[in-house]
Each structure stands twice: as C-alpha cells, then as structure tokens.
Length: 135
Image 1 (tube, one colour):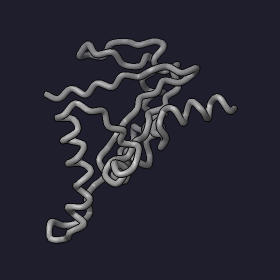
Image 2 (spheres, one colour; image 1 turned 90 degrees about the horizontal axis):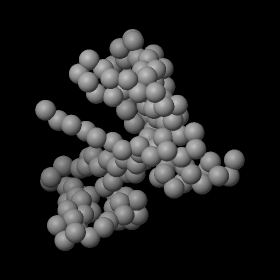
Image 3 (tube, helix red, strand yellow; image 1 turned 180 degrees about the vertical axis):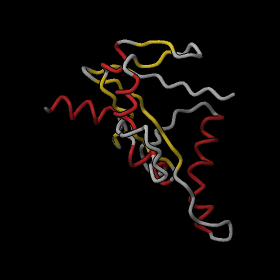
Image 4 (tube, helix red, strand yellow; image 1 turned 135 degrees about the vertical axis):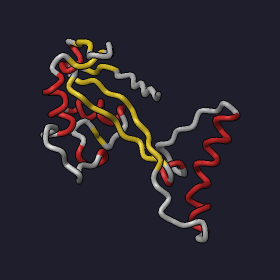
C-alpha cells in the first residue's frame, strides 16, 4: 500500500502545496543526450546523499525537474469529513472534485494531470504569493 502525503499551507483564501516532477527523458540509451539529460538527476541524488539542499527550480536542475504548485481555494478544507476508510476529505467533496477534474462523473480518457487539473499553477508558491500581493 502506498501513502502519498501532501502538506498544504494557507495563504489568504488559498491553500497551496509545492510539487516537483521529473521530466521524461525522451532520448534512448543509444543517444548521448540520454546521459546528458540524466546528469542533473544523478547530481541531485549525490547531493541528497551528502545532505545538501538543492533548489531544483534553478539551472541545471530545470533540465530534468519541473516545479509547480497546487493552488486550491482554502474553503474546500475549512470543513473536513471522514470517508468510509476514515481518511479526512473536503466537506464539499463533489465541489472539490469538480474544481480539480471538471466533470469528474464522466470518464475522460484524454484527461491529463499536467494540463487539465484545475489546481495546478506552473509557478512556485513564492511567485503565486507575489501575484496575489500585487492584486
């Protein structure tokens, strides 16, 4: 059983959570670019072994990693309830699912997490906070 825990922080009317994903290496092992593309990931792994902090939002890490944020209206988390398994879920779970997935009741084979999730903002949390401050 896998457990994925995401800690959200609140900023004004929003809850946010930073995320990082590794970009797919489109090159094959027979192409030198495969190894060049994999180098930042290798260096990051070595940095973690040495317990150094790495900012994957800056070059050269951006070759391999993409930083984004989940940026959700906080009211979805104001009233939590427990599902059948006992886990906390948003009190208005259907509204939350609609915010994230659109019409979630109708299966969509073409739905993509990276382009269709309503909570994804392709900015780091600091940039989103700055945007809110400027409004």
